Length: 232
Image 1 (cartoon, one colour):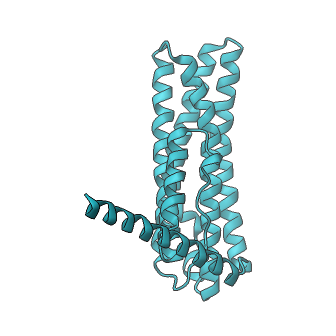
Image 2 (tube, rainbow, N blue to C red):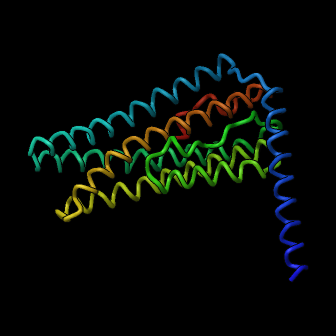
Image 3 (cartoon, rainbow, N blue to C red):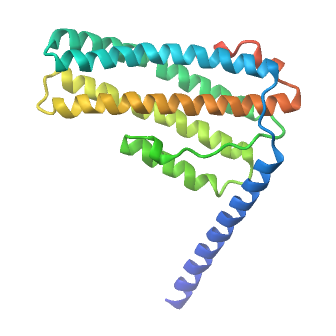
């Protein structure tokens, strides 16, 4: 019994040391980097930002009008707008997933990755997405390199888009079936409107960090020419 307790305490102590060392190394990396984009990187970032914001705004507008139509008693119009918003998300979310997968691939070509912050659980309203952010925040501290931390972040974001899309279509199905839980389903749509925005902004931040890292190596030309390809 004493042996097991000693072993458990040793594991906890080692994990604590890894956590504290990770925090120390992270602070040093942030001091060593000046997170500025090159002019070419800035143009690429602005192009990506403009495109994804426009696409998400269409979905958010449709979903917002659907909720408004429902409040006014226009059930048929609400359903049509809900279907439109979900159809846009069905196209938008996989495109963001593809972009994030591309970021993970290109991060392997960077010798020195700029530091990236973990996701913040408080920024998400859906409990499952907040849990993913907690996981990202925890594991982030135990990873050695900034490249590993970056790839963890974009992986969590990809999973976040998949999860948010799943819950949105689940809510859509309940509403279409006139489920007794319709009120909860509409609240879920409102929650996911917020969280899709958060996932998008965090994805753009990841793209900015990658562009900064590429610019530091003077290799940005390989990726900046066609950033729109990432969204598919």
